[in-house]
Image (cartoon, rainbow, N blue to C red; front, side, top):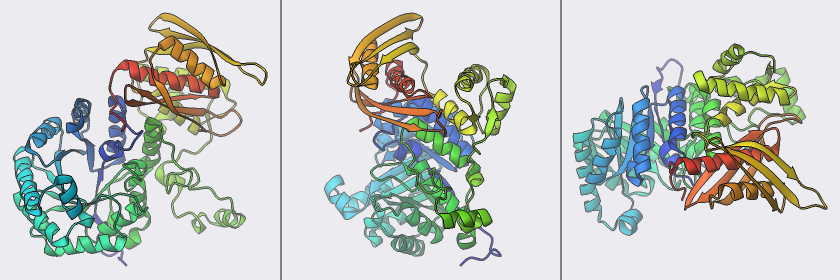
Length: 514
């Protein structure tokens, strides 16, 4: 166990929400959403933002460039395979960043080399060294990842890492690509590399763990405790398959158990809740109630024994507090008679930065909400502001709707839209009120999109709670996420569908989800 007398060392946080996280099916983001998330990460205090994989598409290339132009308080990385042409293309995407990082990867495990790369170990070693040497000519900071490192031969890993460090790598990454390792194995591997890799004392050792067996955070912390100086993670733990190590769990693990790890990170923990909710709103992926640190049940106590203990002393059952991660206290904050200045001051206290037309639009939506609800809480305002960030200029807006439904009558919907000043209307029947509304919308718009999934959840409390609807639409092999918010679930559903339509007609800014 570490003692407080020993000076704490600092570990870097490398966030890959916008690259590895966005590769998760259904989590694709458009340019505006990626920029919003990059600003959240910057305010959160991450050291490195991995902005994307530029070679995958022109849209990803442009989004990486746009993020590099705006992010100033964090390094920006982009991933490339160990191919010279791809490295050059990737560097062109990040070259204008304040602190660019060129990240290259090649697999080193026997199964990957034999079946995926169809290369011998010597060929992989040669390609790894050549790619790092080439990348170093372009960029002073080069990270090298040995994909599937935890299933690779240790002595071969030592040869590869030693060679790429000699070629100029400044970070060596040790990925647990398929979430196969245990914490004990990860710690032993990091220790082995520290003892045997030539030049390792002059570079950062990074760990990148997946969550296939539910051990991503445990493996990451074990790697850090064994001497890794950088940990790669995502907000909410999103990522391919079962996801990546969750940033919020790693950060709060280090903070809460500083007595054990004696390790600091630069995360502003009071920004965790906001970043988590923004990402959930962008992707349409709900946070499970029992999710560690940020789930809605994380600070709830139903057991009588627990309630008694918490009332006597919160430390009996709470090892971290809602305030420590920035959870807003659900209290009445504003009403329908509140002015614009009071609203602006309060949302600034909540961590939102709005001005001009954006502030005017948000205030107008707040006044509409205040007319509908008996009580307006911080949670209401947070939900409203998150919904405002649709990421696109609306082509279609809702004028009015009438939906009829009952046990002995067919469900019908009459909807009126505004398309940039032009009035459009449609009437349709359906198997229920939502189906009728969506059929009427499609009749008006004629997008050809198909509904892939529909979900609704209450985002605030009470009988007049705000309901948030998320729809996933399939349009020309792209999966589009639409979101809508209202105290009326039919209105929220219509707004969600329209949000998706506006993304479709705004242009192809979202990557293919699959």
